Image 1 (cartoon, one colour):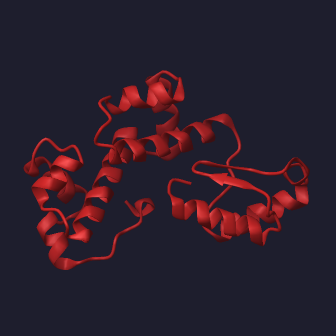
Image 2 (image 1 turned 90 degrees about the vertical axis):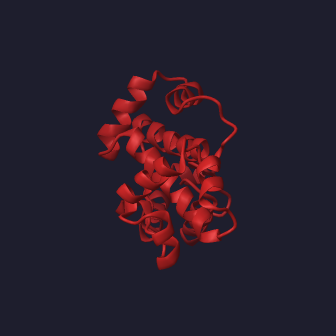
Length: 178
């Protein structure tokens, strides 16, 4: 879960599975002990999560990758963070970046850098769709060194320049398709 919409979807799935006392937050859900240890309840939860496009994570590596995704999204959207991404991940996860990177790439099939770029481009698409900022302001807000750099990276990911994206007014493509 990487956004508030995901949290809401997981809460709905848990309610459908008959679990109403769960504490859901970005990256996780805490179940009451009696429900979390019941295999039948867990099977219902798994079915409902899968129907909503989610799956329950088990294992330390899966949890590390999900926490890394949340940190990456927050890092991309936080212009005030003065750490580079690798330092930010290491600091928040209390793990050496090389370990995080190796696990992330193995489980996701892409590097942290590619995931961060996709998130950054998604943020640019979101800001473009609001039509409240010009491209220079968007480049500044999203941490690009120049409009040219933003445009090159945006086109390499989406196939469109930012101005062509605005003109086309295309619907946003989910990240799992990038």
